[in-house]
Length: 225
Image: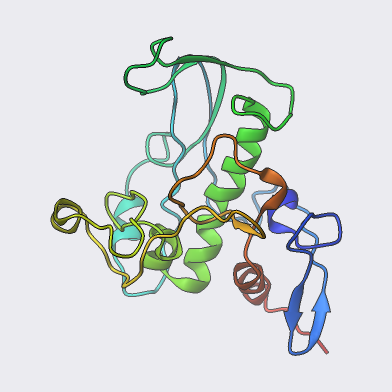
């Protein structure tokens, strides 16, 4: 969380937030506690198996949306809400792959396509970020990745003019937005889905957007004098 939700001088880009006309650096210090804490996410260690997706429908909020309440009726067993750590030999669902989808995910903590540590850090920041988006922006804003995906199923939205009739018919959309292409420069929003996303992504540019970090600060009810 401290890497991707902080906006400060330690980053390649996304170094501050602006309040009125002043710039502030933001540092995040996560605390492992059960007091005044948000929903916990079961941690699943997955190895020698198919790639396991993480998920977090978030908490229940008074935003006139009952879907989050319905999801939270399910027991917290790691089926819907979970943080998956994919390490060792992992099988991906790729078609016509020379290795039948199998790749070895090492644990070196380096930026490559198959590093379990770096993937997990990014995934954790993304999944826990749903809670922040939902708390200040509502369930639709969170579940649709700020308009970059559909509501259900949560597939990446096509860019303007490229949505097919099949996608219009089979996908539930609550936001009048178009999909976005992967940014070739500048910040990469940790909470958005992108078209044409490379593998691996440039994690040095991956960061929570200024609006979302300001939303997180707003949730703390911090008084700036």
